[in-house]
Image (cartoon, rainbow, N blue to C red; front, top):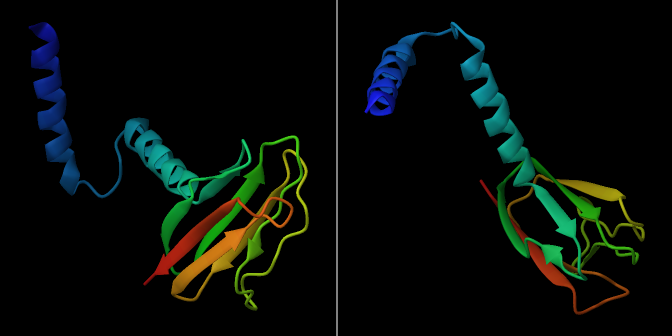
Length: 126
């Protein structure tokens, strides 16, 4: 019961602090850092178990996407339709990454050239 009371007090206090422009303690900063980190993780694509994960992501225009190879085998990112902005990567060894900033709205499909069954896509929105 004491826990419920503490939670109600904390919830009530956080509502009062919504109008404060600067945080009074570090708990708000920690939450913001975690949120920013989560957003960054949404733009990460792991290459593992001979697959891209996630297979499809939707991002806003101007967002950078980073692929990281977690397999022992070498993989790459080869666009079905290469553009000035989205070009094929070199073969990536384990632990290596490749990044692209998508500035044009559209759907970008890609595959791994040594393992053509590995396919995925990036959808870029406004």
